[in-house]
Amino acid sequence: MAKRPKKRAADRGRRRPEKGLPGLEFHDDPADFLKAARAHLAADPVMSSVVTTIAERSVREDRDGAEHDLPHRWWVVVRDELGEVVGAGMRTAPFAPYPLFLLPMPSDAAAALAHVLHARGEHVGGVNGALPAANVCAGVLAMLQGETAEVVLRSRLHEARTVVQPRPAAGQLRLAREDEAGLVLEWFAAFAADAAEQAGRTEGPVHDLAEDEQGIRRRIAEERLWFWVDEDDTPVHLTGHNLPALGSARVGPVFTPREHRGRGYAGNAVARVTQRILDGGSRACLFTDQANPTSNELYAALGYEPVVDMVEMGIGPVEP
Image (cartoon, rainbow, N blue to C red):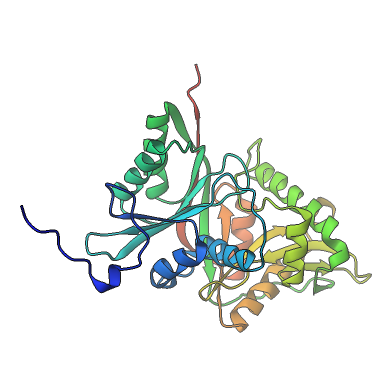
C-alpha cells in the first residue's frame, strides 16, 4: 500500500475539508474564511462584493460582541486539486428561505456542495449568485429534496469607472441622520415593493436589504445612507452604499417616493455617491434587476457598464 503523502506546510492549520470532498472547505468563522479566500476575492473585488462585504461586516460584529440568531451562518471555500482557491460561497441570509450565495465556481463543485448540504440535513430554499454555479447547485438540491427549482430574479452586476454627470436637480445630497432611522426603514420596504412593480412581478425579489431599525442606525453611524433633500431640507430620495471591501463598494438601495419622481433626484444622488466612492480610491458597483428597464437606463446613463449576469433561484414543493 502506498504511503499517504505528507501535508505541505501551507496546508497545516487549514480548516478540515468536508469528508470525502477535499475541495470544499467550510468556515463558521468569517475571519478564518477571509484568511483562506482573501487573495481569490481580491483578484476580482467587484464580482466578490456581496460575499466580501458580508464577511467583513460579520468580522466587525463578532469583534463587537454582537449576538446572532441566524439558522445558518457559514462560508465555503472551493479548492482545486492543487489546493488553489477556485470559488467561494456562503449561507448567512437573515431572511427566509435563507438562500445560499455563490460566487463563480466549477460546476462539479456546485453540485458537490448540494450533495454535502443534503447529506448533513440542511434544507435549502434558494440559491443566489453567479451563473452557472447557482443554477447547477439549485438544480441538484431540488432533485435531492424532491422539489423544483425556478428563477425568481435575473440580476446584473454593473461597474462605473467614471461618472457621467446628469442634468442638475434642485436640492442637495446630505447624510441621513439618526433621528431619521424610522423613515429610512420605511423607504427600504417601499423600495422592495416598487422594484417588484417596475419589473412586473407580484412579489419583491429575495435580496440583502432585510434590515431592522438597529441595522439602519448602524448604517447611518457608518455614514453610508444619503438623502437628497429639497430647499427645506426635506428628504425626497434615498441612496445607500456598502463600506468598501477589498477595494470595492456597492451602491444601493436607490429609492425615490412616487410623488417625487421625474425630477432628477435619483440620478444626481447616485452620481454624487458613486463619485465619492471613486474619489476614495474604491471601485463602484451596483446590481440591477434585468426586468426593470427604469433602473437599467438610469445607471447606464450615469456610466455604469454591465459586468456579469446573476440569478436568484427559488426551491420549493412540486406543484400538483
